[in-house]
Length: 111
Length: 114
Image: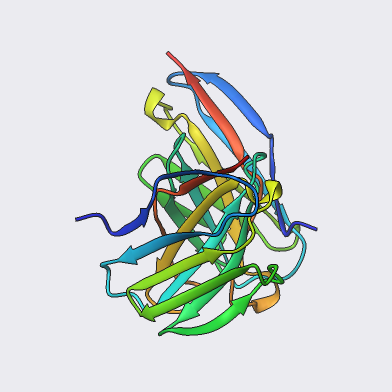
């Protein structure tokens, strides 16, 4: 079964609004990463948050991590049409030397 | 000046054929990966190589054989292609095999088996 699962599977909002995506995972982790995938492209790394961090910012992105609930959220503020993409969380389950990806949240920003 | 490149971008072939996908990274990274993304966007690791040595093999059928001639290249050869092999295959690289490393992905190879 999957390590990470994103919620919702799809999200459609108006430009300028904030978008929040959630990720839940099953086993203990060292870190959690978020990636973006534009249609027909490869994944691009957005942000990494370590297990001893609770919140991290990068530009319009804000990531939180709650290890007690085994969940993370990605907030994109003041969304733009260019933010339309799929967003994936990825974790190394139980210290394994690999990343396991969820199925992603498909975000659509409407102009 | 593409960091991680893959060829070909598209591959359409008949069931039973053998095909190869090539990957190259110019980032000087030690570790390279192959992932398979299915039609539901589920991305699953297949193989990982560190300095030309196989370190992860995720119970992939032995019809799939990765080859790393040097640490900048990781190719994927697929024998006796099946319909279920249709997917997008991504190559990625990272500085080291450590789990906190950022991975850099190629643009993907879209394989369609008819």
